[in-house]
Image 1 (cartoon, rainbow over the protein chains, first blue to last red):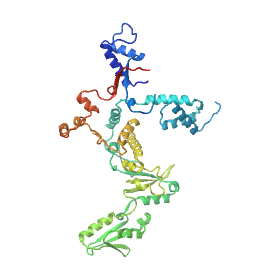
Image 2: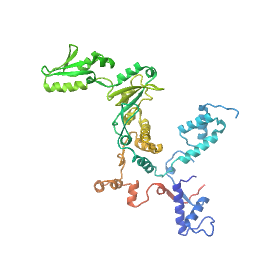
Image 3: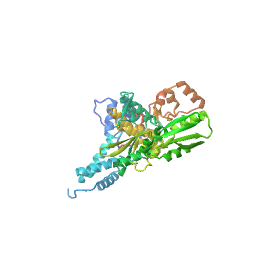
Image 4: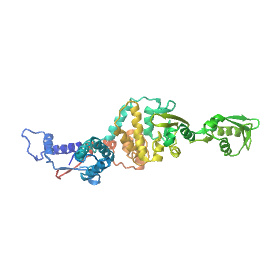
Amino acid sequence: MHYTRFEKARIIGARALQISMGAPILIRVPKKMVDPVQIAMLEFEAGAIPITVIRESDIRPRIEWE
Amino acid sequence: MAKSTLSKEDVLKKIAKYVKKKKYFLPPGVQEEMAEWIVKEKLFDKIEEFVDKTFEQYRRNMIEPAEACGIVAAQSIGEPGTQMTMRTFHYAGVAEINVTLGLPRLIEIVDARSTPSTPMMTIYLEGAYRVNAEMAQKIANKIEMTRLQDIADLRLDIENIVIYVDIDEKSITRRDIKREDIIDKIKKIKKVKVEEEDGSLKVIPEEPSYKGLLILAENLKKLKIKGIDGIERVIIRNEPGEGYVIYTEGSNLEEVLQIEGVDSRRTRTNDIQSVARVLGIEAARNMIIEEAHNTLMEQGLHVDIRHIMLVADIMTVDGTVRAIGRHGVSGEKSSVLSRAAFEITVNHLLRAARKGEVDELKGVAENIIVGQPITVGTGAIKLAMGGRRK
C-alpha cells in the first residue's frame, strides 16, 4: 500500500507520541537512538507500526489505482 | 522486431487491454497520445513497458488526497493576476473589433456574466462558402443585423403628421435587401399605413398625434430589417490557409449555428453562458479553461493549466455555470462561522442565532475558530490502532 505524505506524517507522529510516553519499541534500534521521532521513522520503514489509516475510499468505493 | 507495423487503432486496443489487465487508470487522452508515440517511434514490442512507465509518471503527477489544491490554485492565479494591466483594450486579430482582455476579461470569466462586455464571434465557414467571396458575403449579410436607419433616411413632416423614409438604393443592393421586404417590415408595426410617394415611403400613423409621431420615428429607426439579433457588425477576412472567416461584434450562437454554410464545429464565441446553453456544460467548462488561459498567456503570464481547470471544474460541477467571487463559489457557504469570519460578523451571528442554524464544522475557517485541526493535509487523516501493513 502506498501512503501519501500526509498519512506518513500522521502515522509517524502518532507513533512517536506513543513511544515518547513509554510504549515498547517493536523493532531493534541502535542503542544510542533516543529520539522518539527517529525511532518511529525506523519502525515505519520496517512496516512495524500497528496503526491503520481510515480512508474515505474505504467507505465509498472508487476507482482502484494501486 | 518481426511484425513491424501496427495501426494506431491496434496499438490503442493493446494499450487498453493492458491497462485493464493491470488495473491501471489512464485517461483516454493519455492513451491516445501514447498510441501516437508508439506508432511514431515504432516501439511495437515495448508497449507494455511503455504503459508501465507512463502510468508511473502519471501517478507521480497526481495530486495527493488532502492536499489543499484550491488554495494553491487561488494563489497561482492570484499572484500573476496582480501584475496584469488593469485596462487593456486590445484589437484582436481584425483591426476593427474591440475586445476586452486582461484583468477585466478574467474577472468577467470568473464572474460568469450573462453576457460579456464585448461579445464577439469568429464564424468559420464550410465547403464552397469558405473559398467563394460572394457566398461568404451572402452569409455575412444574413448575419449582420440591419436596422432601418442603416439603409434609409427618415424625414419627419410634423405639419401633416407623416414620416418619409428615403431608402438608399446603393446600400440595400449591397446588403441584398429588397424594397418590398422593407415595406412588409414597416407594415407589421401596429396602427400604421405605408404608401409610396415619389420614390420614398410615406408612413402614416392611424391616430395622428405629435407625440405618437416622435415615438414612431424612434421605432422606425430601430426597426430590424434583416439579420440576427445582437450581431452589430460583421467583418469578412480572407485568412491564409483557411479561406473566408467572418468576425462579428456581438454574439448570438444559437442562431448563427443554424445558418447554412456556417461550420458549427469550429465557430466560436466569447460568450460562455451561451455556450453552456447551446453546447452543454462540458463545452462551457472547456471554454472557461481556454479563455482564462488565453487571457493570462496574452499578458505574458504563465499559469499552469491545471489550476485553471480546477477553477473551471468547481464553477461547472452542478451543471450550471456559477460565479466565483470573493465569497467563494456563489451560494456555496453554508457555515455560519466561516461567513462570520469574513464580513459583517455580528449580523451573521445574530441572524444565525435567531434562526437556530447548525454548523457542521466541515470547513477550514470553522475549525480554526473552534480550535480543532483543519481538514486539510495531515489534519484530514484519521488513524486507527491495530491492523497490519502489507
